[in-house]
Length: 342
Image (cartoon, rainbow, N blue to C red):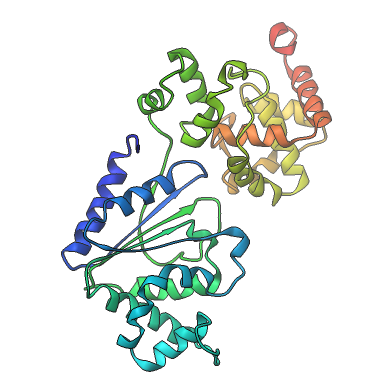
């Protein structure tokens, strides 16, 4: 069951209706891991009644296999190869290992992809659904991009999903995009119907409404520390990897500064500056964390862009580094803050 997502579902219906009326339309969903992109693409596939469907999914471990994703996507349409220009058919067959490969021209493979999609759509309107497009192999991505850019008066709807923290090979395709946020609090309550309202609210705040995190943490919610103070909750591996990949590309000084912010209960910049000086960290390094989309720097305050980013970075840090951060933060507080120092 797809909860909420009224705007997103309307956008899906729009592109499908456009294809059914004979005009091409494209749509890309962008969001963090676990936010519901695949569920929306499943919905698009389900709503494509009376349409032909071509579907593929980028796989990280296969991102170096040339044309692997394109073969997965076009396999049902290969019966139409005799309908497209012969040079294009030969180029595409060679690229997909359907005949001995000749010197491949990317233009010819891209043109063949476009011609094949158009020919296939002559039988009935076509829905092209591509999940995790950021993991398409480069050859497949370029061929698909070539075709998408040139779709116009064809009954074809293209719906793709991509993570917002990954390089996207289809950048520049000028697709209509919808950036996904977390579920609303009401939808989260529906999703976690067996939990108490108070526990659901605390879990919602800790996850930012991420559906995957809500579901995976719900079974242990009563045993997790979901309060504003103390160690952040553990994050499902699928989600934490995305945040940690971004953090791992930063210099060590920046990573240490991020751990300090994750250990802080307020994000007060003055307190962080005093604590950072005790650890030989320059909080100015956090600007790189902001560029990486992990934190936001505001007047006198630092905050993570997502509560799960804070949780992932804190959980990944070595135990002694976390202890040092807490000691530094405690010593940076005024004496009157006895409880917080403790």
